[in-house]
Image 1 (cartoon, helix red, strand yellow):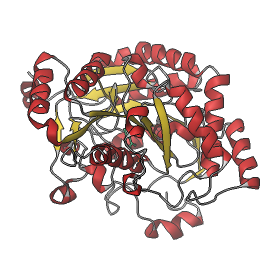
Image 2 (cartoon, helix red, strand yellow):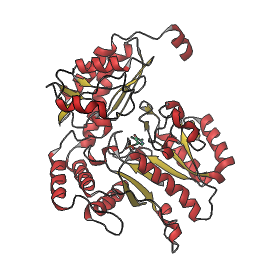
Image 3 (cartoon, rainbow, N blue to C red):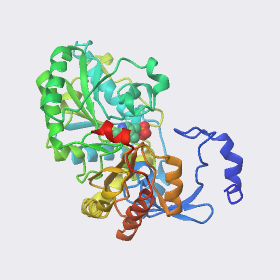
Image 4 (tube, rainbow, N blue to C red):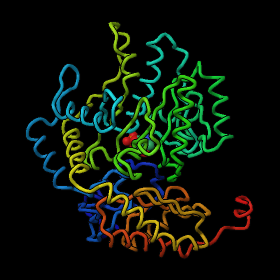
Length: 434
Ligand SMILES: *Cc1c(COP(=O)(O)O)cnc(C)c1O
């Protein structure tokens, strides 16, 4: 590996801080020199078919010419300008377009540079919504088991602690209200009872709608979102949908909430917002939320404003990405991917190491009985010519929507090949599940 690694890899690798890994023991990351369509080109000439679309962002494939051109044109005119006291067309055009796409009721968009920050902004909006109305005690955000909302301090506090990525910081976080999702009558009654008792202290409910991504592609029925809307209304709390992963077609509709027929009060978007090209996130508030900030009192303004907020390059990329949802058959592509994933992954169901297979839109999860040796699995996938990385005991695919049938088949075959040799559940594991 080191022999074939480029000079920049050998010189820079000891100095870069990598995310989420023990750098002493982890395999070296693979040097990528180019991306194209659904493929990653490595420095040593190997080409991998990408099953992840760069953390779920590259929904149109890499380097779609329409987005590339839009970024080039914006770069020549106005790459960036501060957003305090100044505005520009890309941000305002994007804000009105997002509100129109989301549907009536959505009113204003706050543009930031990362998903975590957009959730922070949503939480600040929810809390200040009550503060501005003279109810400062309504400040807690109630979130759900299996949820992931980011890595900043505010968002760590609303992640499911069992996902376990933030253990070192647990004592620094505000008290957490993480409840089971209301997937049945019992869990609904439980949530109702907590809200009944605590509503005077709760600003909002926060949930990843339909699919909880980082927890391992856990899926729930649209009825769960209907129950959450009803409970939020009954107890007068706000409802926040974190659509950072599910937004822009991933679950089969442009936004996941459409499948439930209910709207949140605040919605967060990021990941596929720019089609995987530039960092950008959006927090969208409905008329009810906006009304609480519309005031003659300067103290009622939202005190937030990242330096690079509303970056024109990123907004131009997002506009171009939205063009592609209008001009290319993205949702039909997602539906075809869903059918192919169901059909082709079914053979994995009989493998001894496989516990369950879940498919929704362009998302497939193959849940194993045990947490595998992730590094060994990743190496096996790379040998098979694909880029697939498990989340805990879940091997998943979230391909680009433009992936060809042959490329998708290569991904599902590689999963079958690699998982075929895994052992079945241990007796203890099986007992625990029984
Ligand atoms: C990725 C993700 C985030 C965090 O976004 P970053 O851009 O990584 O900060 C928050 N919520 C959900 C649902 C996500 O998938």
